[in-house]
Length: 388
Image 1 (cartoon, one colour):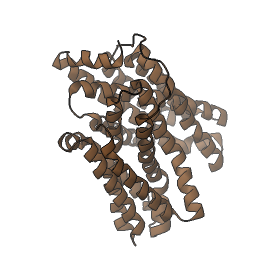
Image 2: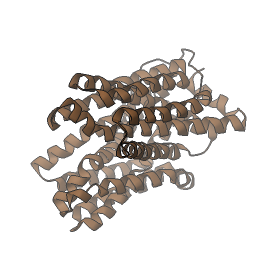
Image 3: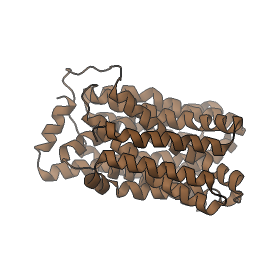
């Protein structure tokens, strides 16, 4: 049964079953955020154990993104053929293996292997859970995508907090990651029976070249993820270098951005339902652009922090609305479209920090943030062109 027919089947199902599928989708997003964030506290332990410098570590971290990119298009094709349930549960298994491997890997080679497996697993889960979310949201007849992505943010905060708490309490990295794996196994056991089991019947191609509206949506995803990547990698540096904030506290910028984004996503479905997706992209792009402008023009760090909060609120619902929009187009098969915009979004996260660094090198970090202001204004102006 092709994916669009699956949506009809869900819509005609009992209300209880539909609610269970919605809860299962939320669990998937939580697991993805939880598993990804669990790696961050392990980084200094892995670096010390492998006895590598910052430069070598930076090269190894590319394996995480490379693994994700390699599995995204494959995961979409497999989900279309065999159903979301099989693919996402299959992808969760290597995630549970990769985290303990990274906790005791003592050589660059094993770290690279662990990061490739972790990235590949997360990439496959990311594509499949968004395909699942598109179908479930469409069948429900109401906006749900922002809430789904909000659970990813909650999972990220929870994963980082749980790992940090376990390590601070004296647990070894291996024991801490086994605790994380236990949470993932329990969560997937709860979600698995209620994930979509349907598979395609072969009337949709496994692969197709994305074009037209899908590439346009992918470009908007690239900009949105570029802004998120800039916050992740450059917000602390910007606060310290441009505004003289103490380095020990410069991480508050990203923390405030992340909190604002999580809150914005958890409240986003109500906003989309009331104002429409196009308006949410317009207002979100303007809000995020204003945040970058405020952070750039501010003379002290206090208003810059307020700017980072605006960026989080503004960016919060752009990507969820774009996923809803790609589920409404018919020019490209759904699994290809979701895979394409997810891959382009990851490209923004991976290539973005380097782009920001290049602009900062030839000009200044403030100029790089000004560039993001212009790009986000373009996203805001593009919202009216989407079926959102």
